Image (cartoon, helix red, strand yellow):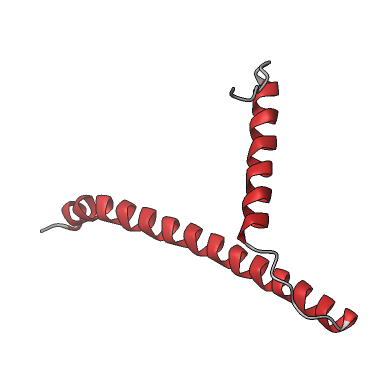
Length: 91
């Protein structure tokens, strides 16, 4: 088999492997950002506990759900305003 034929056979394989490596690299980058954000949040909590000499008070799941809902609502309102629409509560 000549070198040219082997090159043509391997080229699609090379592009497939390159695509897989790029995808995995992107996912790892997102994980790295998530780890840094979590570490920073924990560091802030621990710093404030040590500085103020207080115990940790868990805000609970409902607080996180309320914040999540308000962020989503604000985002939807912004998107609706971009298209000249307005959000109205369901009756």
